[in-house]
Length: 255
Image (cartoon, rainbow, N blue to C red; front, side):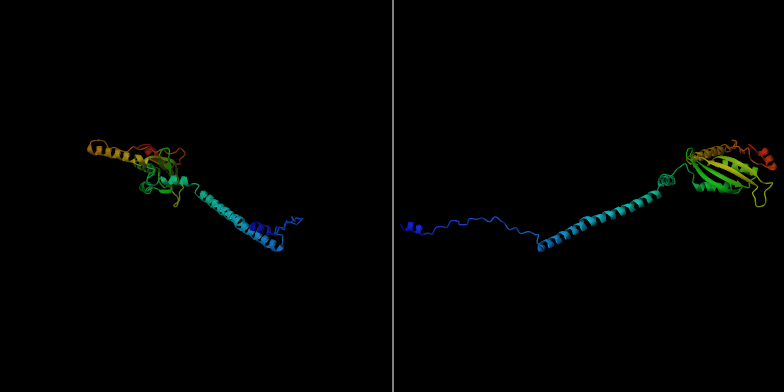
């Protein structure tokens, strides 16, 4: 009984008496200047930093790289132009190296020694050029000499043909100026071409000459062996004086 009475004594809750409901919600916005201006400043600073580091700096780096590339391309083009004929120069240079030496070429010092021994005592060398015929592997000497008479020219050619390294001698022109020559002018002008043998066959030719000489020394009764000589043939348009014409008649073709 007591518990029931205590429950009855508790006050009852009041029922809601409000008859209206306010549905308006207050929303805090950023439109207020005190909030908007700092935010805009932050956005502007962020955009400027992004443009500076992510766009402008990258564009400057790209421009600098393009300028360096253009400079390198120009330098490369200049280098290529400077070495445009490198392959031809290398090929020519390799002819004279130890590994790629063209064995068909004579040592130029040997050629100069030949000229010194055979030409200098008899005449004056006005011009000299040396070329190499790759098809026949022969060195060709083109010379213009002055001074020798017709007989001296014949002796000069005979002496050249006796050299193992000489294959042929051709007299292109002989001009005799003895009648009109003064003290300071040469008596004659001779244009000639000396064809040398293939240098790779020089050893074989020398061996053949030594063998022939050994046979000659072993047989004293044998007739002397003379090196083959080619008759000196002057060009048809050669100008020859009266004295030299007689010399040509007496010594012209063969001795």
